[in-house]
Length: 141
Image (cartoon, rainbow, N blue to C red; front, side, top):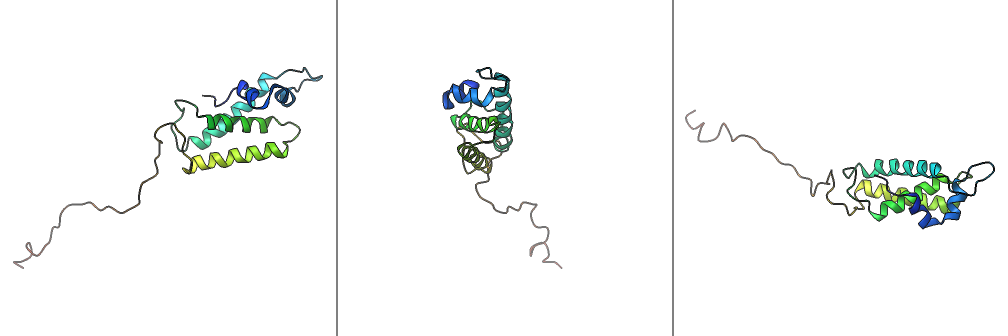
């Protein structure tokens, strides 16, 4: 399940920026290269699955807006062919920190129960059969 689409990138960053990041034709075609966008979004999806899949069952029933935001930030960073700017790097680093928080359970996604819930408390439980020897069973010895 894709976390973001080309239209999500356009809505967040504008068509002009997406053209600048994806138009790799020589001479430039002046249009968004859908194949380049699809590759960047697929890479972002794989990265997100790696983090989110450690805590939630995949595929998710629905995509939370936070994951769409993260997918867009990661894809935009990967599209920067001439080297990411400071702003792109900052957004990418924030997205990775958020993914780590999700994987570590510090940030919960609104998607229902986790596949591997964290234990509420840690304790020791001992179970076994009753005592074989007691004062009553040994009174004749």
